[in-house]
Image (cartoon, rainbow, N blue to C red; front, side):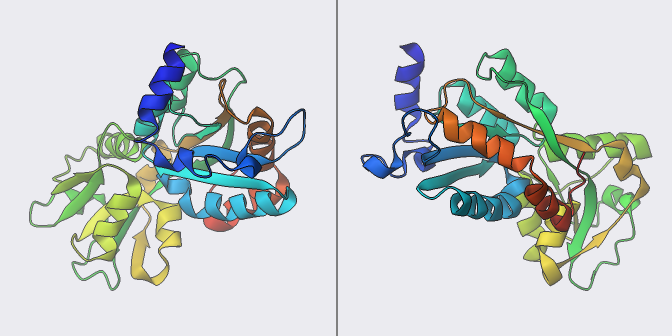
Length: 258
């Protein structure tokens, strides 16, 4: 009862989960039939690949609609713990998934479906001639990083500590996509984002690898939620994300697959 009341209160915050409300075709189907709406809370760095895979999942299961809520894994975990209605959680770090597990919101063991690591992103042409992590300690450079409580920020902290560098960020953003936007708009000289985000940005940015990135590889776990409104579709979506077809999509996007 408490969870139901909290879910109602959060309906306005997580508007994406309310899409299709009142439409019989969006309701969870009876029995083991796969259909209706499946709401997926996913890390921002999964935006491009999950959007494409959602279309493929819908094509394989006519009558199914995948609705995504992309954001920082830490924020998504908190929303789920507070009772936000969702079917699946895909996190950019085990830590945030564990928070949901500890809260009793997941019954099936999460599975790691991809891995990702950081890369330096600079505007096209690299006008400030950024060469590596040492430039992040230069107060004359405009630097963007993720907030430390989100996975990309925690990974950045690890690589800087490994390299013995104290960064001088001009801004810390709420998720990796917000950091990448700073680069694409030319508002900063350099940033740390996932290499998949550099690839997704195409010719808008340039990427610079650095050896310390291997010290902070992020595992991405996924799991259906215990109180999923559409549990059958949730389980099917998680299974699909582990399929060969999905693995090929992730590899093309620059993710490492287990």
